[in-house]
Each structure stands twice: as structure tokens, then as C-alpha cells.
Length: 53
Length: 400
Image (cartoon, rainbow over all chains, first blue to last red; front, side, top):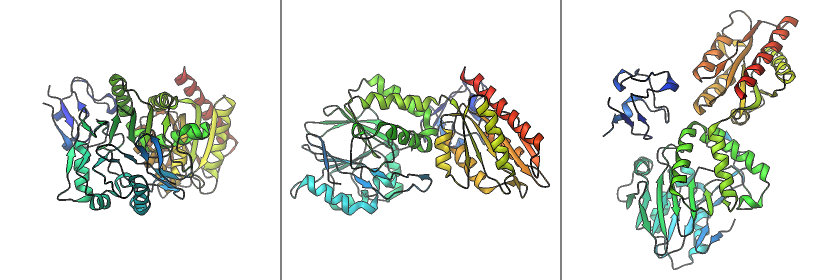
């Protein structure tokens, strides 16, 4: 699945890992993340993420 | 203070802000602070960072003492755009007309948004890039979110100096410039307070950055932060080890009870919880929000294993000083903690429910709260004492 990178801090959201700290299970695609999900490093919202090359 | 030569051709040209007690409007700095910046004399004369704008006059004086009358500044290196470091940038650009201003990719964006310049000679230096000053080289390492997106480290291999802006800083105004010239315990406490209130949320980035630095095998004689004392010799590995320890946030056998109270019922409950904790062998500190600033509480909370939050119910909510504390603490994202709540109430009793929600939102491990209508009784104190015992048991389990 497509990884997404935070343009603010460079954190990469990897669907294979999910985001355990925010109770996002592995296998969750970026599109399926809740609208209020934020970057676990810098707190930026989903709009600040772009697909990783 | 007059400029200080750190190595041949490298000078501290910073400012000691003896009277600063409020750092950035949110953290207390009871010992004052400094704005360190550095002037490198080479074929290209280079200024690393500036100081807060109110000290522009003093900075010009420092620069003139090193530069004399006939040398100019060719390059600026801006590691971070926050106004305590880049505050003099516009004035310095106007005065010295530098040939280049080097900054990180995110630094360029922040610089444009801070100064709205049109014709500055800004050049982006991403991680891995380097520039030559003549005899010396400067290498650049992005340190995004340590602690702003634009944060950057600058390393000079010939001088073996790491200019690291806000990392490794402390708020301490002194006539000494080096960590090996001052009281070690005070230094460590101030470094910890600085970390707890400023760097803490970015602990994962600290670990990642330090691990990247270790892989680069840099020889470092001096770590030069922009606040407080600079580190050299044995203090370099000591400071790096301290930062790793801070970032790992390993809890200690300590608890903090932070509370506000209206008619002293919640305060009395805090005392009973503290007795339960202390009798079970946990070091405990009780901190009233009426007497302590949120940054002082955060420094105590930093390496504690448990935090107990106390507030009575007020207008179906909690008291404002506790709301302030919780907002501040949540933003700093402390990890590996146990949380619990206490509070009294008059008619409705939302206090412990609201405090519990905050505890859960911060990802703390919850121990059952205790609340009481109006004034605690002997039974209430017994419940609070047992709550203290239960928190102590949770701490012991966590520290195993």
C-alpha cells in the first residue's frame, strides 16, 4: 500500500505498520485514517501529507 | 559579556540575558538565559545564528570587537528561525549585506514567512551538503522537529564543533561559558528542565537524530547550543548520553500530585494519597497550581512514574489552573506514565470524569479515581490512602 510522508517533519506513515500509539491497526490505508488523525511526530493534520515517491 | 575565543578563529559572540525569567512566554527561566551565536573567521567570515532583536546593539558591539573595522561578514548560517536566534537577521542582513544566507529547506520557508524578504541571497543546504569557508568546511544536518520543522545542525570537521541551536541547551545566565566551569548538579537540573519543557514532545526525533549522528562518526570536541553553557571534552559524550536518557523517558520511583482546590477538600485528599504513596516507598511531591508554574510542575513530572491530578468540580468542569496544566502537559506528550484523579464536589461531580478523560487522552495507565461530596471523612482519607498504595503498586510493576 502507498506510504505517505509528512511535509512538516518527514514522518512516513506506513500502512503496513499503522500507528499503534494512536490505536491505528496495521493494514490501515492512509485514506482510511480518521479525519482527525494527526502526525505522531509533529501533530500536523492529514492535509499535510503527500504520497511518498 | 565580551566575546570569547573558543578555538583559533572561532568566537562566541552571544548575549547573556541576566533578567529573563519568562522563556518564550510559557516556561519559567529562574536563572535567566543566554543567546549564543558564533563568528568564524576564515576566508569567508561566517556568523552562525543571531540573538534576540532587543540585543541587536550589543551584538553589533561584540561583532565589531572581533571583526575590527575592516572585515565584513560574508556568510550567515541560520540553524533555526525562532526570534531568539534569528531575531536580528533582518537588521544584520541590512548592515552586513552577506553574500549568502544558508539555511535548511524548511528554514527557507520559515525565513520567507518571518521576514517577507524579496532579494536576500538565501541558499538551501539540505542534509549532507557542505560549504567551504576557505580552510574550514561546514556540513549541514537537518534536525526537523528538534524542535521546529526548520531546525538544523551545523558541523565543522576542522574545528570538530557541532553548532546545535536548541538541542542540548539550558536556560542559565552565567559569566562562565563552559559546562566544565560551573556546578554540575545545577547544570544537569537546568538541562533537564529545558528538555522537559521544550524538547520532550520530540523525543523520538532526538533518538533518531542522535543515532544518525552516531552513524556519521563525527569527531566532536565541542557541542555548542544556543542557550546556556557550551560543552567540551568529556562533557560531550556525557551530554549525548543524558539526552538519550531523557528521550527514552524511563520512569523513576517518583510521583507528583498536582492539584488546585477551592475550600481545601481536594488539597486534604492530596495529602492522604501522598501518605499512601510514601508509605509504599515512593518519593512523592505535592504541587499546588496556585503556588507552582506549569513549567515547574512539568519539570517534576518529567521523570516521575505517576501523576495524580486533583481538582474540585467547578461549574460542571474543573478549575482553570488545572485546565491550563493539563493543556500544557498534553502538548508535551509525556510517555510511560501512570495517572489517577482526585476531587471533591458540591452538587454535580464531573471533576474526576473530566480528569480521567485527560489521563486517557495522554495515554497514561489509569488507576481508579476517588471523589468526595463536599468535605472528606475518615473513610475518604482511607480511600485516598489506598489509592496511593494502588498507584505505588502500579509503579513497582512498571519499574520491574
